[in-house]
Length: 80
Image 1 (cartoon, rainbow, N blue to C red):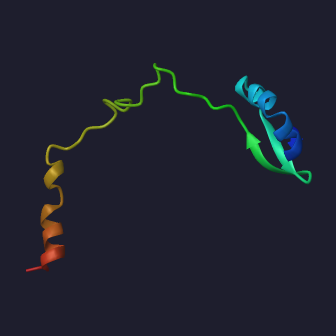
Image 2 (image 1 turned 135 degrees about the horizontal axis):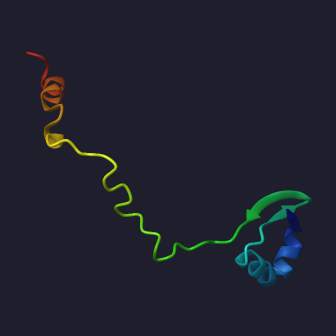
Image 3 (image 1 turned 120 degrees about the vertical axis):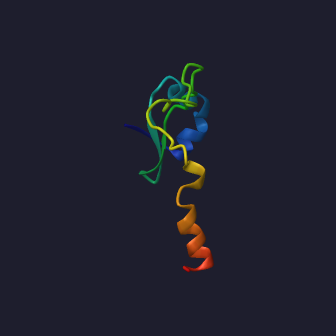
């Protein structure tokens, strides 16, 4: 991986941003020690829909809203 020192990165920021935008990954270093890794920012495309992606993968029980209701009441009110 290509590495640039902070001074060089500040001086050539526009060019480095262009490199990252086309997919080139590089590091910015301070005193020869890598400090950050620069990677391109990838926006989600319109066809990457997350809502409903698990549809049909599992079934919610009909009694979901009342599941464990007796046990919860016993925990709060004490057992009788």
